[in-house]
Image (cartoon, rainbow, N blue to C red; front, top):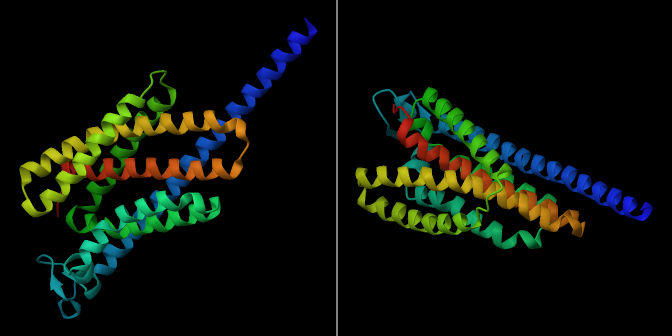
Length: 258
């Protein structure tokens, strides 16, 4: 009996240790993601400010009746460089995912923050197209929706892995449709893409959260802190991308244009 009590006590202590480790792991994931979000929006706001001017004599092109593009703004938004800036985050993600196993956890975290800054440059145009108030409002709406979806993914007992496969297939189709619509410039297709995008990234938020949790529970016994550190950064990257895309698609619906 005493031996049984010892085993039960040890099992309980191990479970408590794993629970504590999971909380720390998720805190790292959300913390890293949050810092990345701050870097992204700070970079976007700063670049948008540098890209515009109200002085016609210092302008490279006119944006609207009261706003002009500086030479920097013209390079980012009107020159062929815009295509590089548009697709740079996507290429960055592929390269980061392929190379993270060769990086230390500290290096991976630094690369993630650099990526967040690149993403900020890529989406800085939102401050030229939409009012600042609507950008903030949609950001808050996205944050509330994201928190609810992520909480669901963390707490639900339902296995979301099958849904994840379906969502990834939908994401590939969505990317293809977005690239095609760059050339078609169809407002109807753009509306459909935004609606489908909201649904896909809402689902991915819940799926990715559950996947991050399950990955930790499967690997916690290994004790490999370096691997777990990199897993937290990859988890932060996945949730960061879910948030950014959910925000951008919601902005198409709810944002007030300048």
